[in-house]
Amino acid sequence: MTDKGNEGRDSLENRGESSLQQEDAIDEVLREYGVIDPPEGGFEAFWARLRPHLEVDRIRDQETVQNLRRLRLAWIGTCVASVAILISLGLWAKALRKENTALKSASSNVARSTPGEIHLPGDYDPTVDLIIFRHDKVLAYEPAVIARDLRIFLGAFECFPSQLQSMAFLDGHVDMALRSHELPSAPPAGESQSRGSQEDFLYFQVNVFRTRGGVSQRTFTARVLTVPGTSVTLEGRIAGKADVKFSLSPQTPVRAVCPTVLDLAYVPFPGEQPYGVRAGLDLRMNQPACAGTFSSGEEEYVVYVSARRVGVIAGNIVSSAGMVRKATASQRASES
Amino acid sequence: MPSDEELRRCKSGDPDAFADLVQEYYQSVYQMCWYLMNSDLNAADATQETFLRAFQAIRKFRGNASIRTWLFSICIRVCSDIRRQAERHQRHPLTSTVGLEWICGSAAGSAQNPRVSACREEMRRKVREAVCQLPESHRRVVVLVAFEELSHEEAGRLLGLRTATVTWYMKEARKRLRAILDRDLLENVQSRQEANESDGQGK
Image 1 (cartoon, rainbow over the protein chains, first blue to last red):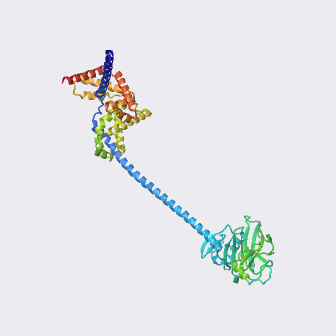
Image 2: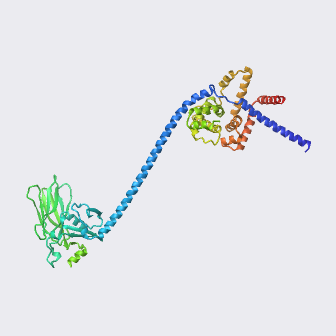
């Protein structure tokens, strides 16, 4: 290395040293003169000021911990309650499914069962279309599959509960068996059903229209199924200022013949002699026929009657609308 | 440095145990706050807030860093918050309000020669003003490295900076301080250093 080179290196080293020295000097100055002493009173004064804050903070912290614990407990309680609710809902849904399955199974059992096994109890509710009881236990409600006529038949059996022996629901049809001993004696062999028989039921529908007077234009409609020999009475009674309440009721059979006369009695006041109309019935009529009119003061009523004959053959129901129910095997056997 | 037992007591919320910790780091934290806030009043508030937050958060202190570094990190955050809050509300503008009264007061209490004492106070004032003139990023580095003698790596970790950046900030800060401070002051110190060195060699 040349002398110039040595000199250059020395100068660089010197400069570096002086730079380092300057850095040291700056740091030294900072440490010596830059130190900031705490304000008067020092630590004691500062601590006296800080301590109350720490105490407050500690108390707040404890409260926060307690609140958090309470919150956690509440959260756990909510979770447990939710789980319990979910479980109970699940169980309920499962039970419901099970019950549905049981009902379906029972329904199919009913369909397979013999008619004598199913009984309609005495406290049958006519507002429900059909309730199938078995051994005094409700098995099924079947409102959707019952035809209109059958519903009316069931309503009629409210009046004659003792005549229903059994009922079974088979392939969309209802087989009903009636007690034969409470019915009038069987018709003679060869008698035509169209002429009416002692086994016939008569189904009346009575519509009463107010054509004049009154507050409202309500129409009274009543249906009744009677056994032969029953007289049907339509009663109208004053109920309020200008309203008449009607009722249609079958009476106890007095004659062992099929009635051809519908007595429509109108009783305006209790104790007064009823007056009304007598309508001749044509059992072949399908459309409502005007049976007569009567009036009470300013009010005038028109009574329309339609009738339908329903035959019972060996415990099976046959309506004039052509609804022929299948006879059960045992009944067919007895017929043969 | 607090022992594990002291730290455990601090974590359990014992204010007396925390008092030892406060006493140990009070001066460092106050100094840092003072340089970052540039005001006696705000520095006192920031110091108090720093220790209050430390007391609230010490339960979460995991010991990954030293307690001193942890306190400094809280301190820096507190100073930034106070600054931001003050700027938002404009109620206590943080201007350079070096506590002259306090300096004078401490100088008056000094038992030294009045002339030496006055000279010394003058130098302290100049140094503080010089540091306060640095940008905040540089000031933080200077306080941590020059005053608290943290390594560049530690300061970088604390401030979220790379070591090279800290080194560069420090270099820049020294350059600016050198430019700001009186040449006389530096010469005075350098001559004193040389005198000390020659004394040491003579001995």
